Length: 418
Ligand code: EPZ
Image 1 (tube, rainbow, N blue to C red):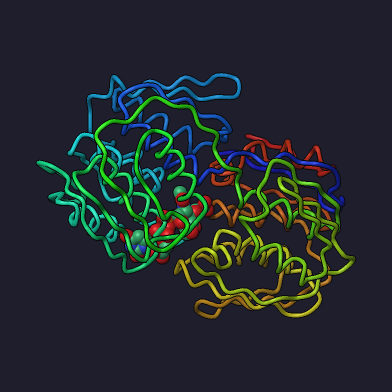
Image 2 (image 1 turned 135 degrees about the vertical axis):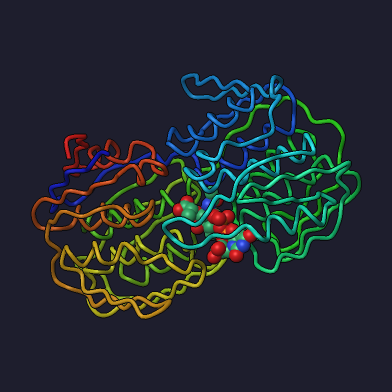
């Protein structure tokens, strides 16, 4: 396992280029399976989660080539339809590839992805959507097998606007016979990117970004190339790195429209923010003012920014209240932050963050991807040195995070010795 060694206290200043979106790239890599042939993807983040998806494609018999700034995926040689248990457990979001395999081959075998560090994360909504499309699901001892003579378009009413269930329902219905309508669909920008990718391939989808999505089944898709949208959570992470260190950063190659709630909260806290088409400039105040946050499905405040904001506002003036409405166990990072002098108490879904003057370096452990990112922010602002263990969690979702922080004047190194 690797660790970060961070010496805090530097104000981060300068320019950073935002990478492609992890949460857009994963379903789009899966969607390549729907067309037997070559797909070329640009702006795919080079992170462990995309690497994991390439491994699954290769285990199914496909080929993946990484060139300088593009990924070439050849699915013409896929001949297996079972996702290995180890990969299902290593990466929960691999469940997204199931919809594509079933959609193309009408059969798939996989195991329950199981809970992870932020909650039980069941897949009941995914399975219910598959059944509505005429897919038979059999389960025994955690292994799930899906089969269908043919996939028939249907109306799918989601109990909750689940991002993954929305994406899997789309993937399973692109090549179906007839029309599928998904109601109470998730509205995240990553779903719009998936729709744009699939329509470029020849699919007939409309409504992504709203709560009702319509998919007209089609027979033939074609070989394309596609440019993945920027990562909105990495964008929010760098905005908060400026805010917590009292710095001034210009973020390039991003899309400000994807994180309006985060930008308005940071402005409310006293940050000066200037947005253009693909850039955001942020200048932090001497002292952040406390705010209140409730995480909600998009376009509400994103749950993936919850821990990062908790960390940022641990040194604000006043008390910040955060309510986490999406995942039931997304505060594991709090005990680690408190080792650094944060004053955070968790009451059920709420975290009460009493702003403190200073954080102090400590030895802490990443508990999950965004909880780990929260520790990086705290360490950048803390007095002294922090060692963050288990950074593999962080490497799953952030491309060259330490390199980008060093370029902004941060003192961060990776070591495998601790
Ligand atoms: C996606 O996860 C993202 N991951 C998550 O980002 C993000 O936090 C989440 O959406 C919410 O925005 C990817 O896109 C790869 P959900 P997903 O299905 O699809 C419950 C990150 O840090 N639920 O919208 O798994 C579920 O338990 C990651 O980049 C069911 O009950 O999220 C949760 O409480 C973390 N049954 C809520 O819905 C189901 O069948 C939202 O989950 C599915 C979900």
